[in-house]
Image (cartoon, rainbow, N blue to C red; front, side):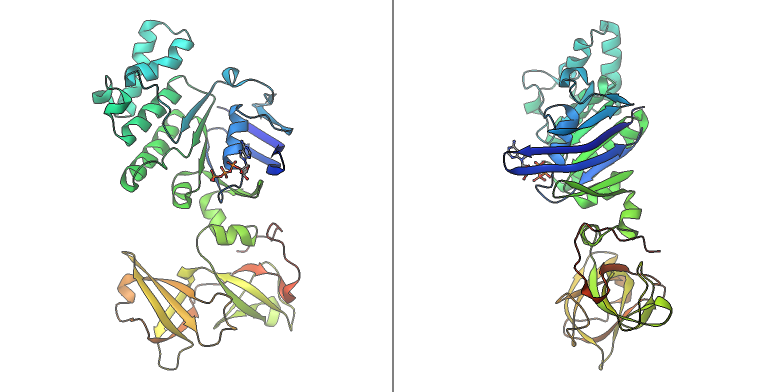
Length: 367
Ligand code: ATP
């Protein structure tokens, strides 16, 4: 299996800096999603990996061997693009065969591999169809089968699901994950869809403005973001003004919690509380008022506005409650919003005393 290292990559297009000091390790067999806002450099990173673009500086190594200047054709990587990029005049079978022919495999070997690929991507009944005769999901499965048929060292997927509708997206996403684990190929998957990344990745690399902010498992990213950018990019987060208490604790609404920076008496800071860490109780003399209720199935998202605007840094705070627990809530109700009793720590979103805070500054983990 393949270990790929991109090290201190810089890439500019004229005045625009697409990647700056970009370093990342893709461990053997991992499915890594590169995730970040539009224009953060995800596609550029993938294109440099593939060999379609040359970095201005920095290096790419595969199992320790420097491939920075190796051309695309010699890298032996598989690629799947958003627009499928199938050969329109070839059937599914012929599309899959294309790379195998280039590898000069024997006819018997090719037939065996194609049949296996058609089987594992559930495309047996589409084998002799041309791309225009198939649905988007089927075409993308052919593209995937074609990419993995040649047993590539690395599989690169560039927004492979974004042209598909929600249901197909979800099932193909799970299929990609299953196939990737079955064949064990190290995979880099570029997406701007957070749910997609969290659902399928072993590791998610969060990017911002050409840099890697953090790479970690989905759960670690959510629970231990290294900075406020990651904390607010992954999932939702409410910002509350916290006051200092004893033994380095911070007071947020009703609770004393720990954070990565212990408090010093007299300090204030802004701490992040996730929507599911809040509880909402109807109370005539409560601290907030419900402004919106969205039923999302098992969970209901309740938006509230605090009577004292200094409490929260957001004009609106959101709480995700179990739907079964909030049937009695209505828009306009006065409520008491509190931090749930089992919450013991919170993410530091802004330094004590509001020192200058840069988004990329690291903060240490919270428990
Ligand atoms: P998106 O999610 O919108 O596809 P991205 O994260 O993939 O965005 P890139 O396509 O890698 O971002 O672009 C990074 C930056 O580099 C952007 O500012 C973009 O405008 C710029 N850029 C990328 N390719 C080129 C190019 N060929 N010529 C000029 N600028 C480019």
